[in-house]
Image (cartoon, rainbow, N blue to C red; front, side, top):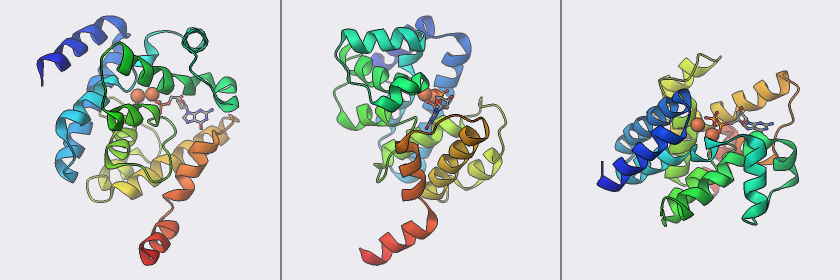
Length: 198
Ligand code: DGI
Ligand code: FE
Ligand code: FE
């Protein structure tokens, strides 16, 4: 770990609640393991994993105020589902407070909650590391996803997105259009079609 990353880690240990900090460390090392497996940049994976939830240092209400103050535009969906906002505030803080300039790292933070179609390898790594890190409480399908993620990351992304949509629907929560698009894009049949066309 670089000296700068160790400094950020120390800062986050003070800013985040204990559980959130432990989750963050879990995501950081899970992301590094996936980077080793798939040949992504390990330092970028550690950095994005460490910072992915840095926007959660305050309540969703305060995150909304933060967005208004810093002219961070929010979609209608984000306004009605404040749990999504920390991805945007996190990317902003990573850039302006923690000095991260790499757009691939910043995008991985921005899209870690909803995913998006056609993600970069690093975006997929952070999206899935967030879902499977060792401290995550047991949820249906978690074992299956952990079992295949080191063989087929796209299938793991699909299963995570599908589980998220099912879970939100069961709870009667609205689903962000981007979460739906992620699920559709990574559907195995859609992926096969893409493969034939290219
Ligand atoms: O920040 P984490 O708790 O580690 O996980 P996360 O960033 O994946 O998700 C944060 C919250 O957002 C979590 O409670 C699930 C929720 N969420 C994810 N996608 C959607 C969503 N909530 C709504 N309403 N709609 C979504 O599409
Ligand atoms: Fe998050
Ligand atoms: Fe997270």
